[in-house]
Image (tube, rainbow, N blue to C red; front, side):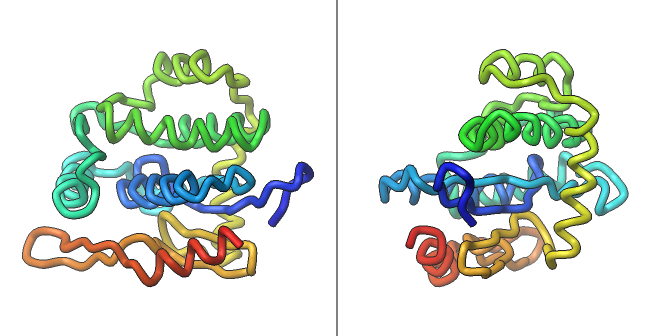
Amino acid sequence: MNDASGLTVIEVFADVVCPFAHVGLRRWIDRRDELGRTDVRLRVRAWPLELINGAPMDPQAVAGKAEDLQAQVAPRLFGRFDPTHFPSSSLPALALTHAAYRRSLEAGERTALRLRELTFDEGVDISAPEVIDQVIDELDLPIPDISDDDSVTKDWDEGRQRGVVGSPHFFTPDGGAVFCPTLDIHKEGGHLAVHFDEDAFAGLVAACFR
């Protein structure tokens, strides 16, 4: 879809603490930069896994996924991931992302990416209030209010109505929807076998950057 300024907006439902979304969003951004398409932006919506699963994410389980992703497809990511500093909740970060999008598409996208960098690449606990305050100051963001807190469950409700099945789930301007198009993932023994899904990603890129 297009916003009032004429930018093309790609919606993606994802959780801040999902390592697969971190890889997928980063790869999408890298391709956009390669193409020089500053006219296309991401609107990252909340897909709160701790509410969906009824429990916070397990830091050690996420660490195992991050290790497999780094070893197989994302050597530049997860360099300082620290499960002992894994967020106890992603809800404050998801609310902050919504607040940033109230400022602008650019601010929202930058915030969504920065929170993931802090979590997975710098080993910072983004559920800590002082870290939320740090990101607000760093990116000059509005302070989240009750509407931003409410937006998390509203996004979850809307995502379910639109058929979201997991994080990340992209919606493209041609009306398409695709779950985790960047990666082909299956289990081998106790680890994940991960490969880039080149065909699915090429389809996503073609739909996003017309």
